Image (cartoon, rainbow, N blue to C red; front, side, top):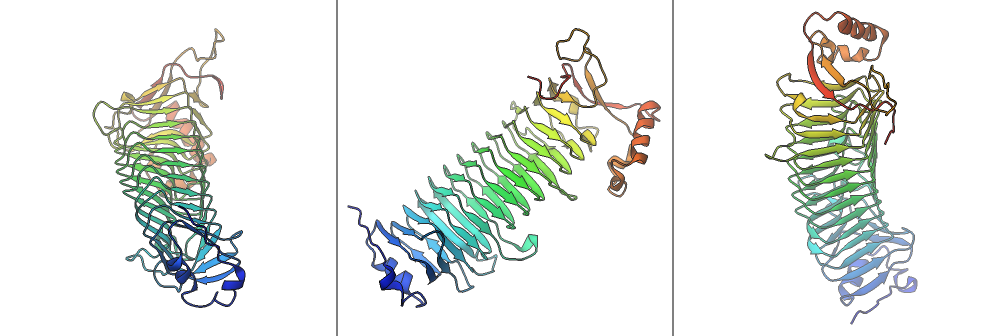
Length: 407
């Protein structure tokens, strides 16, 4: 039997500032009760060890920590927090001071909460089948590397994380976690918008990431789908849209990567033998580099993508990485120099992309400052017109599309 326990304004009006008012209400509530909190400030660093619903009203019920430790600790399954403002955690990384900490629980919900001035936002360790939806999360006003992660999953499987907005946190990290659906989230002014390590069978779709150092990075992971995401303005020396390192059996489809230092970064991917990564229908546009190959990366399939406005469509920092052993077919290349005499929308001859050994600015970070300038454009033209050495074929697309967006 589920009980409903309503904390009335009359009862709590004189207790809002008392140190243990909310904790006492939690301790006295029967399992399955619902605590409805009126507007006000409630002393934090609370612990919830029973199934319980705590519901604020339009985020006007504020749970405020004392600046040390975690504001809300959830140690029971089937706990729901909704419509709350949670703020002022501690600032110690070694203790993972957070707005909300969840450990060894399942079927919990954090919904429509505002988590601010908290080092870490939501820390999830061994959490399964839980809902993290519609929350706003902002870290403490520290330098980027000293902030905590907005959301952190550790050995946490089969969760749904949707419509959360991370602003000026550090990372959204997913470690050793599988089967999670991460959709319709927004990340701004962080480091890694979304960072996977040792994960599998996750779905990442329809997220928007802007002005971060890195959009999405998949490391030592496999069997994941990323579709419909928008990554914009990942800049700086480490800036990239989507990165894959030792990533196998991935599908990257219908993503837009725009205004990044590097659009796609591919390092030893796929990693597992006899696996293939499918990179299909993406718009890789107006980046400094469209695709950056690092180390040996074979058996990726690039199909029906759009490469437009990139200063360099493809770069390779190691000429022994055999980029030609990846399949490129049916992509649109804005620098294709060919004709379509039969009018079928496909170029009459392959699109061949060469690397010229005399293009030293590609590997020189100091010269890269002049990317896109008239001087570099002239040097690029001269390298193609009269190269000092035999160019190296990076890729060949046998069926290049003549028009952007062509089906």
